[in-house]
Image (cartoon, rainbow, N blue to C red; front, side, top):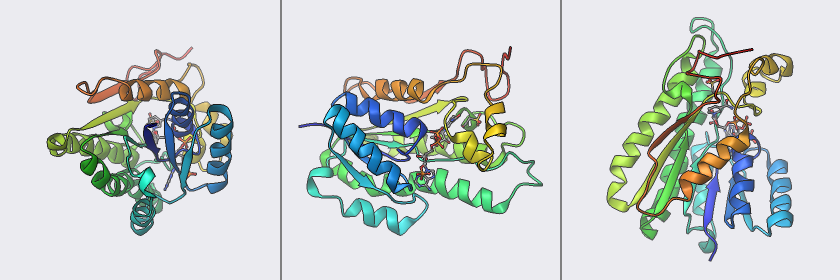
Length: 252
Ligand code: NDP
Ligand code: 8X3
């Protein structure tokens, strides 16, 4: 029987690259994101390229009732989830604390923090019942160090770091692995979202160095998922070679 991976935020970036990588390696997929048309296109592509079966759950991770209703109505054959990748997330704005928008702050906290909590809480009964599972939380280098104008995005990813550590302790008795992956700058739609559709400003973020690609991160996530049952990568920070931490780059 094929293993099942559940990926949140699969319509773009790391999540979409993970969908291809896990499909290419024989997994069936549960795919989430708000843009349902993109999910349908991805489902068709994965079916054609890898003969992959996928089940679409197009909910907003911020909406507590949608998360629980959607996951609780999964058919029996889709409940044996082996891996959950909590990837859905976003930054909004790059403003000084005193100038930032409360709406942006609320959306980042609701997506990056509450979204991870809701989806994990909804999926965990299946994993506990199956006595196995692996939760992979996508944090960020911003969850290790804060940077100027990063305030609440950094706080939300520090929360993912803490939640991952807490999950690892509490789920130990159930044999469930918990991995946190913390990437540095990667060129996806992340900055286009952060700068609210301004593609020119988004491009400037990646000038002067070679950032990570979505595929670089997907390959690492897949590696952490492919280790033997007794081995768990707990915490992994990855940057491109020209990035040392949140704010030191060797730009040419
Ligand atoms: P993208 O913008 O390319 O992808 C983000 C994904 O998250 C999309 O599929 C989007 O789908 C989904 N998403 C956003 N909000 C919601 C929501 N409320 N409900 C469901 N899905 C949602 O960015 P990345 O691939 O770069 O980002 C993926 C994760 O990686 C995020 O958690 C981000 O914070 C983190 N990260 C990114 C880094 C980078 O430099 N790119 C570095 C470190 C971490 P849709 O809009 O269809 O809902
Ligand atoms: C995204 C990377 O450095 O823009 O999490 O915060 S950064």
